[in-house]
Length: 414
Image 1 (spheres, rainbow, N blue to C red):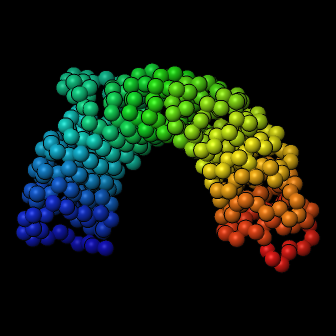
Image 2 (cartoon, rainbow, N blue to C red):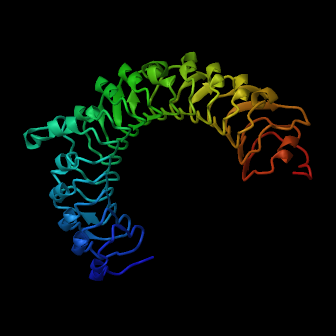
Image 3 (cartoon, rainbow, N blue to C red):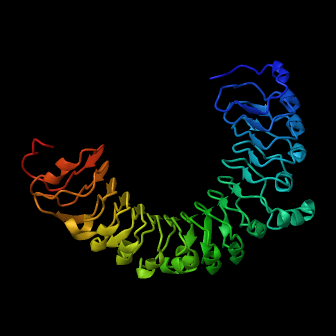
């Protein structure tokens, strides 16, 4: 790990174009302004190097830069006017930098003509996002609508305490959008359907509410959407209907946890033809787990934690041959689980099912099709004899079978 101060002798490296000092320790040392004279730099990474103080405006002289990463908790700026000197910049990361004085952040960062990826996450103390470009942003309206290059926008964790501005929906080539943990309020506009290139959208941990627009179904490229920790005023099947246009085209991750959802998980879930991961934990959703979940043959990760699902598991869960992780802890499941429920779970490595009222009934010589790494069956009825099939699990790292009504002797093979 490097530390201390940078030496101006670096300027002797006339042909230096790639400079990476990330994750070193230059604490109490400012970013030296002479770095702005290393004219051939195309990539500069000073992230998490514990530099302190003002980011020097001389970095704006690096007109050949394609990549600039200044992520760090101890840095701040007075303005961002110097960014206008970086016309070739494609990747800009100023996450955790104090940008509270940069009233021009929106105008300048969004008008970089080559920008593909912008990360201003983790409490940059950004000034509020204006709902529409004001007179102070007179050139922004044109620039935003013409800015077709941006692919990745990360504004996670800035506590904007506002609604989602409509101009955000104009980035037709945007593929990754992260607005999580921003105390965003109000509803999601139907204009979100304009983000037709979107692959991943994260709106988690906000105060969004109302009903989701059906225009979400226009996002045919969508593979991941997180809507957790919000206040949607609709039943879960209505949310799935809003997404139905893109569900059949390959949505892989859906996160609806902690969203104050109500109603039953119905067989509307049958529209998930290619779902790879379903996160629906902690919604306090009641009713039985729908049988239609068992036909989602591409599932690899299924999270139904902390809900109020009742009855027993659908038997066709046993056909989810790609399922690697199943999380059904802390529900109200009850009844019998048999060998059929696990018949083809050959990929299963993590099974968390504690705090339900389920009974496992399998033959004494049952040989499971899986090799688990983690198993949690706390409060199941596994007895009266010690489950001999556990002896076949040679990769276990975590096992919880407490309060499982087991009596007698632990077999020596275990």
